[in-house]
Image 1: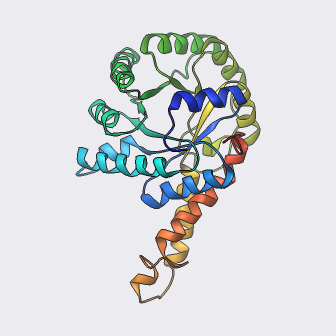
Image 2 (image 1 turned 120 degrees about the horizontal axis):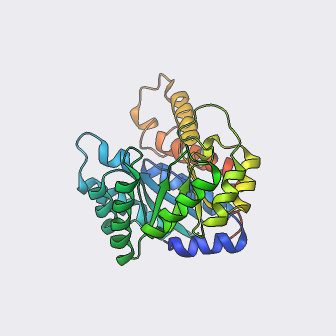
Image 3 (image 1 turned 120 degrees about the vertical axis):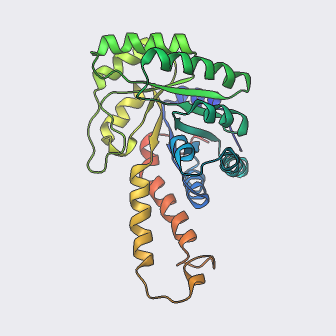
Length: 286
């Protein structure tokens, strides 16, 4: 199936009333694990990397960005299901520009500390650049202080002014929620859906209650992001594997056995994705 355009992914999800999962990766084996799960369930999926992490690390370089882009794009091209590829949540516009050229087919400029007027201007400029390269753009609209009607009106204005392809909304979802799962404000989400025609996105899928996710999909959510719970499960298993007196380093890294950390990591990421992907209604949609 290979790399699929975000527009076609979202159009199919809307037509069949499901959401595509974005399961964020951080390494080669985590990318493989996500695609393994998508192939096992015959599901479209979005892979990618966090832009704030890639751009903000000590010694971060555009050369490394290109390597990550080549890795993800190659994995998508070899996949047996439709795969989108995102450079997610980056406050550095220069890096977003490079991601557009590097091979991602979805980018998300995100800067929660920026004034809305400034963010709107920047997103509009980046959307123009991205669309010239057939790259889609996701942005977020954060205005938790507004009531449902005012939020929906503001979000609709933002979409019109920027020309973004997807909009991440704030309806009670919480990013990096380490414990528990909570319901969404579905009244707020419904008000947004009535005003906005672009696909809606929920970040913080880890902490959203199952019933709310099912309802949100019927209200226009077409992409849901997951990351925290995957890393929690990954680290839990890796710590167990490392709790050994095995003196041979090859048994833990690089021999391809059941104790190899790369093998274990790929498997645990696949299992983590399988825990949530069915909830999105996308299984069997390939």
